Length: 232
Length: 232
Image 1 (cartoon, each protein chain N blue to C red):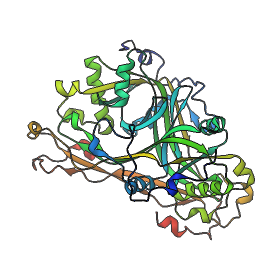
Image 2 (cartoon, chains in turn brown, yellow):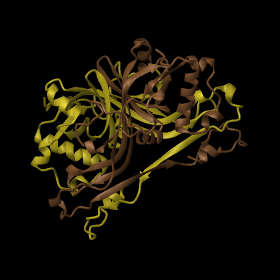
Image 3 (cartoon, chains in turn yellow, orange):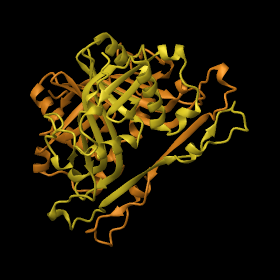
Image 4 (cartoon, helix red, strand yellow):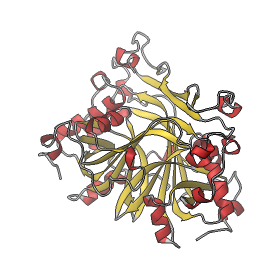
């Protein structure tokens, strides 16, 4: 099941776009779609949370989960008892068909017509087959990457997983092969005949950030907030 | 296909929890699961963005989309040409099996061990079969609800959809029957033997908000920012 000779790292460079496929070409708003590798990476790297879809008993399941990106690989971890990861192990060779989606909403778009209300957003949708990662070294890299995706610098400032914890952790990998980004920017697209309507129109940008870190009750007070947290 | 006698509105009241089912009982972290109706509603109503999963050619697809809640109904709209909604029409009577997921991340949880790193979050997962909404009155209610979900008060301050726009818009409904919430709060759960490790530990709360509204270039300057936007 382990794919050591990964085509994604030996294949095209960072400037080659992802090849569009039947399922990554949208049926509408085609002008919003992009296959640009750097754009895809930047959208993925702005977060650590994805929505992972898989099929269970013929029905879709969508679960929020953390991920980490290492080059053209995405890693997701979980308990060996959790459903998607259990499925991966059961499915053995073919892996688990998944769809991994990441979305940032940047603004509410308020048009004069209800119909043209929209969002400014950036999303990435990855289709593919997730495979179980069994190589101990790749598992270490993956687990570090998931921590680093949320807090760069943190993996070197925490205790690595021990043997017992590693045994309880399943890791799956999804390669960035069949990928598209979708981006909407700009103001409302009102119909020309609506321009004189008396409704306020424009966008409301969203803000996102972090508040002051809150130390755990049992933290030794001599341990101060590390620089990598200030950098968030 | 239209289900006018909805069991969700004639059934149990707001204080009755959603009945757990095989797929809404988690295989792990059971203590985080909840079937409380008010909690589910509050998580849904804090946003307007969901991730909608469906199955296409046997593979999962997860797309970000706006939704609106009216009581125990969730509504999603889209172009009549978009894939999930096209599928709904094609599927006619049985509807489209979907999984609709909403997630709020409240804090990064930094434990002393990499293994116990986590997120504080609140999520809702809805399983069910989405049906096409064809009744004109219910379609109006649904479209208003989707606008109101993002900006309460806005549906009355914009031009309603006209006949042509309504014809281009598909609306689907998913009833809140098979639903669970999952919530993690609090600080890190470190192992007792890790307490003396020299790593900072605690949580980093996330902040979310709105910046000043930005009027469209062609907005009549005498039209000021409405009160319902200040209320955001």
